[in-house]
Image (cartoon, rainbow, N blue to C red; front, side, top):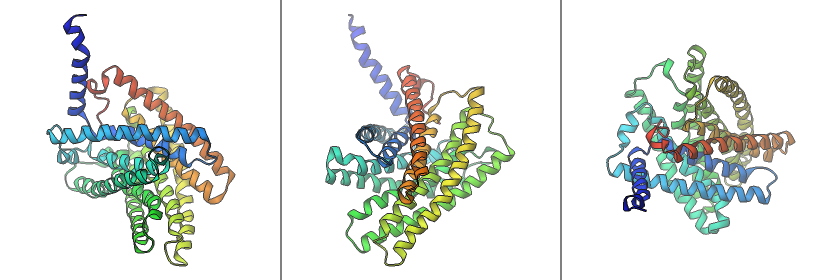
Length: 374
């Protein structure tokens, strides 16, 4: 083999790495979000077995590795001036996806606390999960403030161009609220636990109200202006994300706060969590049905692969988590069966999105064709 031929693999790797560093975008983290969501859903699914436990651990490991690689690539891209947080926040197409890195970190944090203990041990897993949760919460709260502020003052938006992606900036605090319930029992009893639980409920309420404002605007847009671009159809599923995550967070917080808040408020919050969660869960199923019908129509015409297909995965993951927790809280067989059905659909969505991403990346189209850009 010639010297030039022997040098080709190193040259090719160099081109790919350089392309990744120059083109890495927040939307790439949707892969991490989806993978970690499947891991958490597997860990929470009723009727746990060895296969589900092993799947949850394996997917957690993949999600953690992806988060580390993309986090490092993003840091290097910003350090070298290839990307700018200010420019991303002012770009109407990119700004909503600034929520993806915090959501990815928070979902991996929850997965680490639930499944990572089997590999890392309880202490190391909880420390790692706590660090990821703190970073994700701080970044998520910043995104929840900065991106809407930029949207109100800098972006040129119209009612007929409102996209489902604009529900994303308010989602990270919802994810953080659910994670807080997982970590609360590991804090000193008393004011530490009380502060975390109360703060988590506040994050849940604040961002859930903001999310419903965004969903109402999206509903109005879809009622008067059709979503003609089929490639954007998968983003309709993003609405399931905050709905499912709100039910999940409420269920977890209701359980974690029962012994933290003084009577009768602890018990009241657990009852209130189910009273809040069931109507939200019902609306999520309604949106799931609407989105499925629109997606089926788009697929009949032509639905090309893009990273947008990961919009099928994370939202379905949160709805599966929510259904599993409702089944646990109520003991209802119907919820257990629905959780299993949703998990099967989640696995199919994950397989399709992951296969498409790997196939296009292997062909060198990830950077060249820009499928990893919004």
